[in-house]
Amino acid sequence: DAGVIQSPRHEVTEMGQEVTLRCKPISGHNSLFWYRQTMMRGLELLIYFNNNVPIDDSGMPEDRFSAKMPNASFSTLKIQPSEPRDSAVYFCASSFSQKSDEQFFGPGTRLTVL
Amino acid sequence: DAKTTQPPSMDCAEGRAANLPCNHSTISGNEYVYWYRQIHSQGPQYIIHGLKNNETNEMASLIITEDRKSSTLILPHATLRDTAVYYCIVRVKAGGSYIPTFGRGTSLIVHP
Image (tube, rainbow over the protein chains, first blue to last red):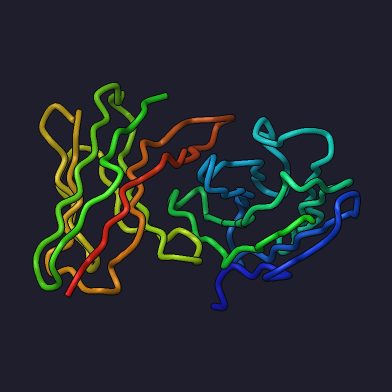
């Protein structure tokens, strides 16, 4: 198994631009999580899905952030418009919630908003 | 939700055991203790978890005190590749699923 796949690995954009981060979870996993990591705030949970349905999005910073999971093998996290304070590493993780709560993390997307 | 307290940093000599402590004095009876680690520039990696019994796997051992208010992760023979941030997490229930909440963790440096 290739593990959790995220793209792009690095993204540099200008303030005001739309940014879309992508994630492919491990096949067979039915829970998917989006995290953000910064030096100031550490690792924060933004949103998680169970069976493609958003369960808890209380960690999403504001309306500029949105996440979708159209099917079991793909999810996106979109920021529109982006701001410099959104600069962070964004991680996607998946798990097979019925068997274990062990989360498998992707390599992350390093986002820089200028 | 139970919170955890870990020392911000520790160091250990290569080949020696690394013992990483974690306090979780408000843990409830049905909450598990999980450990993850994050090597620089990578995503966190699951290590081990337990409820009240000591646990061991190929990566580490987890010792949980009888009152469950603290635990220790043991890396029996630390290597340079074990240099990472180690997170002790108490499982938080949200919306019917159990979601780990990551704190600041302990930065472990293994030196030659």
